Image 1: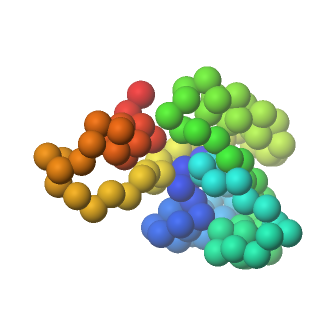
Image 2: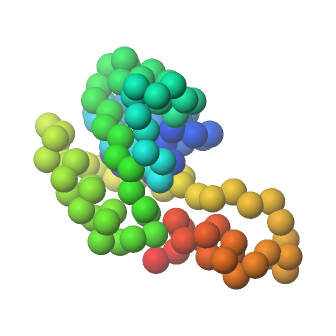
Length: 116
């Protein structure tokens, strides 16, 4: 299973559930580079997931780039015992503003992880 945005919010909860209730193999995709040796909320969450039953891999990727996402998923798929069986797409960029009030740059940044 692939979970984009799997280290934050509902994505983290979904990833935890999948590790214990599915085939136990989850590829987590996110925009952030997570360094296990640099304390952060995301590195702590990744460490927590890695201690659970099953296998979790984290890969940093720009989900707005089809080519980069495809490459990362294909490379990671080789590390699992079974084929990746689905995608839970929860990545996004949060922006609390009315559409009429945001700039074109902010609009693009908000939608780019969701729209190809």
